[in-house]
Image (cartoon, rainbow, N blue to C red):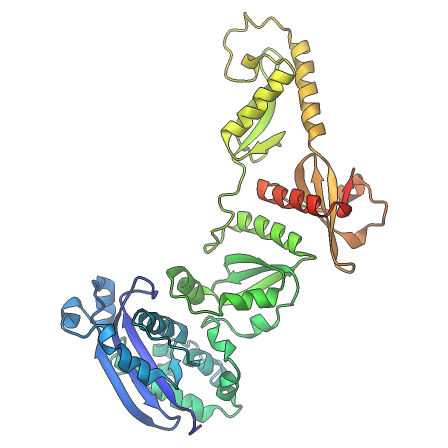
Length: 444
């Protein structure tokens, strides 16, 4: 290990993500794998207020950094110290994201390999109760002088690193340094085997936190490649850094095609509302078109907020969409608009009897259903395909293609499919697909 040069780094900051926060203290310990070669430490003026809770944690306050150099003042020195060395830190992605971001702002592009002492310790010292720096050092009898200060934590990390190198009889560190050192880009608490077990096929993946709760859902045409891409850059944004800290495990569901993966992703997001999903949270039908019979026997239409246990004739994102449709139906079938909209207290001027009105309403409903197509889409590869059902203009569910012969009926499909909730996003996907691949569409 003599030919490998390391820079063991620790920083204190004003917050938990690089974009919008600053560094208040930095310590760099130069190491050759056997012993310390040099040290650098300084307070940093972050050019922003230090929050009270940070001062409570670190002891660094605004007065202490008032006359300290800014990061720009030390950027060239920091860049030179880190260049051509392996960047080592406890929870390395955190420290690296801040320093890379600050150096970029000063015109320096840091691009070095990284090693995380959390990940290394898990491999070389398995079975310990905790791998936080304080608890880990306590377990292996390393004292930390100046906890939550940059040099104190960096010095403890250096001693930890020496113990890891000394105990690495199976060459884990050398393996981590091979190639592009991809494992170092993974979240600190995510074991690499969660990535390795992902198939290279379409599907939906789930990120779980320490308690197993799903915090993110995504879709992929290649599950392993897509999940790796989440961690392939060191984005300093709050959302990315929060996600990196919270991911502990990954599960997945294989799908027959990208279309099925898109649909399943939409269903799961709406069902689970994961913390880190933003897309599709606004895609939902707020209103439904319903019918009811009033106290005089007239079948009436109503546009209401969607009811959980009632099946609407049709659904809409916006109230005016439903009102526009209902007015067209009233005009086409000569319905009394007072019986379509609003509350009626006085029926004296409703000259049309209930049976005649109800016949018109039935014809309007029948016409609406006839305008809404019923068809199936076959999608996927020969050995791994699915059937998606659109029933009267609504998405109904998915069934494996292998369960059916060539002469499939609507009744057979309904009996064997897994039902799923309908929404306009899924409808749009299926209609677009059917238009693009008409040969995969079967009308019923």
